[in-house]
Length: 368
Image 1: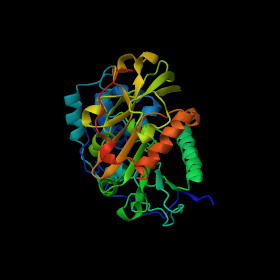
Image 2: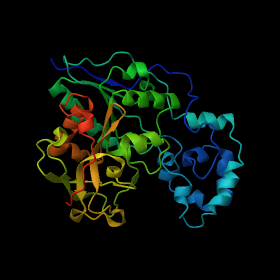
Image 3: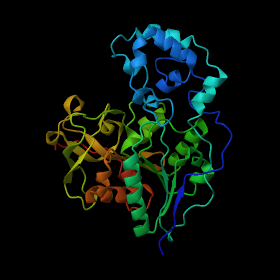
Image 4: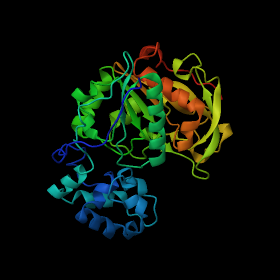
């Protein structure tokens, strides 16, 4: 009998959140732009110092989440025409008092909504998985749905328990104990409170599994160092825009890994191809696949002959997998990509024969 696939999107409304990150931080050029724009006083300072801010496009200045304004800072806009001296603007913003209305506005995009206690049942011995889909930043709407559909099909086929939620309140020690792995399905923007961060980090370090899909590692600015540097292991730099979607060759680096079993030496597909500010290999990641940059046009985002695109890391006793593949919903109809995700989930949930210590050793770079 196929397992129940639970979709948990509603929960009892909790009290207003008060422990959100940056709640009490001074306004600055390194604040999320949305926090500046949510404050009338800080916005007035910005517009006086830089009138050009009034002409920023709506997609950069939207103050209702999901919003790209959660992913950028004024420092990241400093190359815009007429932008004032960073040091001067920073000092002017820091002089604006942070009041209770500001704190409430900053915390409003977080939640403490604990999902219902019911967890989808699994077949005996099968994986119990939580699919997490909270988005405060860029909404990969079609890709989120396509990835969820593929995961649900896997669950039906494999007898997995699959519970889906967009509530940060799921990140409690008690709730997370019900799952072998948590899949971040295109999560974007800072989405967890301080207590939720601590619960999720503790879950991973104690032996939980993590699968990060595409947008979950693609934010231009991040505000949780542990997540981006330790769990994912690389900071997003950008992706080509002219054109945005290109065919590229994915090259398998270690055909002996069960995560890429059956994928041969690689495949070619069309997608949005991420580049990173740092090579995760240098931080000890175990690289499963790279991009052959000779097969597409990365432009000034080229990483060279060693361009990781899929990798794993060990974090404490936990297992972390990240794949930058999957912006286009069509990517979830590519058989090799689906196989990669299914085998990655199996590994992250601790159901693979491979142990984390053996699947996280740094692989030497090989030319495409």
